[in-house]
Image 1 (cartoon, rainbow, N blue to C red):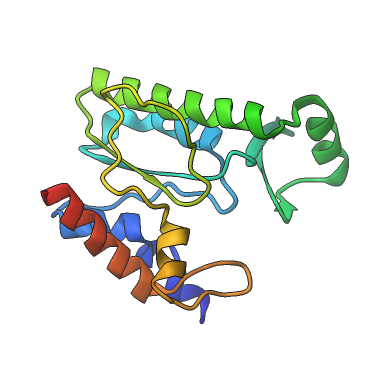
Image 2 (tube, rainbow, N blue to C red):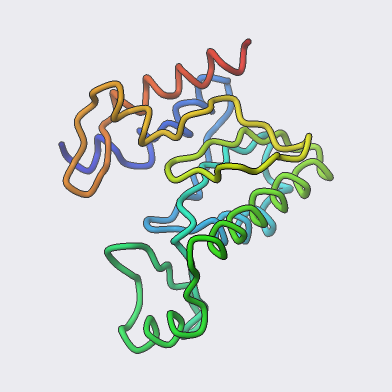
Length: 181
């Protein structure tokens, strides 16, 4: 499976937006975090008619270093080892704290979007938050994270856990069916 098969142009958020008649502006960052999602949305929210928020795991973060945001994700990071170690020591989170950080970003993005009349479709890419009652302005059209859904459907994935266009396309259809209902 080549990079082009699961790249930005073939991701389920882009396919979903295009199927709704919008022009997609994918702001995803490889290894990006929920912090990055809120940060980017906060600075760009006036530019969009709709947002597909694809929430990631609670164990991702980012740090500001040398005038750039450095994403930290399991299995890799985007900066120097000393910078990573320093940020890990200062900001390392356990499951509960990471869960709270994810909750904060989801609630904040949805509240800001609502204040600016920007509809949000919330989707968990993987590792959802369980046992939390969401406020009325946070809507989840599908109950299953993308990774779990695609895996249960038997779609093939790369050693890095990326699914191909076929899985992304089918998941976009699945979301559309649930939005229509």
